[in-house]
Length: 181
Image (cartoon, rainbow, N blue to C red; front, top):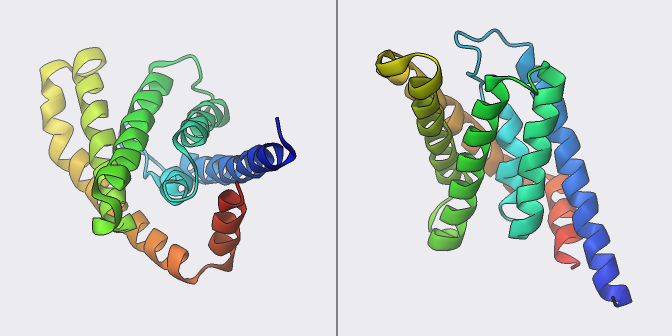
């Protein structure tokens, strides 16, 4: 391995670790917010994933998603429960759809659009799991509230991410550090 590729890998690991720590912090904050359903979250811990779409290559992006899920499950004490399964499925659906939309749509979609796509994908997968494992066919009754709240938080996170990417010196440093690969 050359010195340049080692430095590049170190930069990506540092950015991933930092964004993972932010995801864990936001997970802890999110855990304190009351939830109408045990698996329902606001999604604020997805903000580092939303930021990472533009700065991390796919492999590191998936590592970040897994760190978020594992960390959230440890923080919430749900590692060996169905809630962790919901979190893993929702996060992976969200992460893959966000990354895929950025690749397929390039600059035609803003962080706001990416956030809404991710929130919708996560909520649809979690509703399907709720129908299979928890509520049965009556899961459809939670769909309007669940999808509506996901849309609202997706919009809020997307607006925040747009502003963060535009105005944040921290984001500029993260982007520069990741691009030094």
